[in-house]
Length: 273
Ligand SMILES: [Zn+2]
Image (cartoon, rainbow, N blue to C red):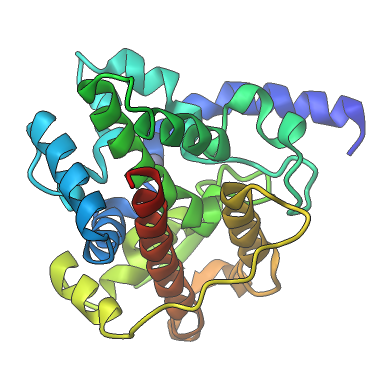
């Protein structure tokens, strides 16, 4: 992409990010809860005890209950500023149009989901930080691991993560982002605990091999999401999400949820050990 185009794109993003950020709910509440629940079930006893301690300090009951918290900060007058400051940490755009993570381009000043994970995992693992700070970091980490696994939170198109891509779904007008957030998941007609049971029953998810020379796992997760978006067929023919699309992509979405759950558990086991 030529520099002038890049600059135009950057200006476009600056103008559109606030609207995008408020409309984004990655996975919707159901997906985030499922990821958190799957992770919870895979925590080792010491990490579980530490998570419980931090949740209690925060006045929260479960990991699933806090998983969507960062999406609702901007609705709460007392948390509005934090919501604003962290709005760009829910997603990223691969600005080179490919799916290769280049930090200064794709995550300037750490302002993307990969940077968000780096920041809050560091706080969570720092025992010198206050309990309140670490509890808050835990809530961001749980949420951002979910976000980065939603393919449209790390895509390579200029359509605000599919929010600008209108589709027909289930006889109604929608957009591709919403369909991936929750629309396809709702076709299972399961509440989140039953949905988590269903996915857990599929057994251990196979982790993709690390992508060399990338030594940043969060960037790898984003690159995987981007590759799903970039593949032929992800953008449905004729802007219509039909049964064939759901049959093909719902299993992909569910694998992303299972991967997010497993990786979140590994991350918490490692960070809180
Ligand atoms: Zn989010």
